[in-house]
Length: 262
Image 1 (spheres, helix red, strand yellow):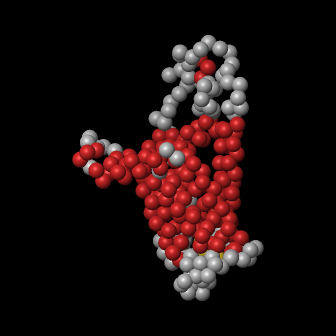
Image 2 (cartoon, rainbow, N blue to C red):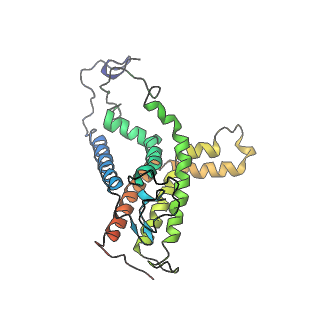
Image 3 (cartoon, rainbow, N blue to C red):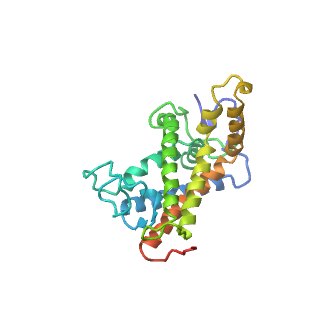
């Protein structure tokens, strides 16, 4: 299939586009934001330090599955002693896999990083088009399974919020700014997950008659409204999960003190 400026049916003009606005600004901002997140999350994942400030734990390190976790950060230890690197390198596989295969993020990085195409009414520079039928893009087809894994992690992060209503000694009935930060992080991740295209299809897909499934239809209608704002929730949750890790890092490293509400 011919693509790019030589695509069949494209107006025979020499320029890639006749647009006079700053069409390049959005893909450029997308690249800048995603690169910034990649750099930050990579540094924090390999740091393997300052991720637990009782009772708060960074979402990058929750649940802490290895035996080399900071004491109190996790008692699961599913991985065992053989893994001596940062536990975040195991955990981040699943949320990052969910985002990398997300329908919105695919559109974002296709346009931003690969210019395929960079913007509406702007011809892409590639000479051919193979879609997502070849490696590695064919792996995007497992998005739904990453969605299921993401729901599990959402439950775990929600449990972390519950644990955030303790003080450093483990006494219940306390809350601080960190509790609020973790609460918002879990809420944004839930909204992002529920607004996902796969979630919408899971609830309302493969139905011939909505009238025979009124409950699923109502849920599908509600999820469709969320789905319309999926891009917004994707960016808000991405920013906030990084901010949550940053806040826990500041508290854990004694750079700041957690503000206690009660």
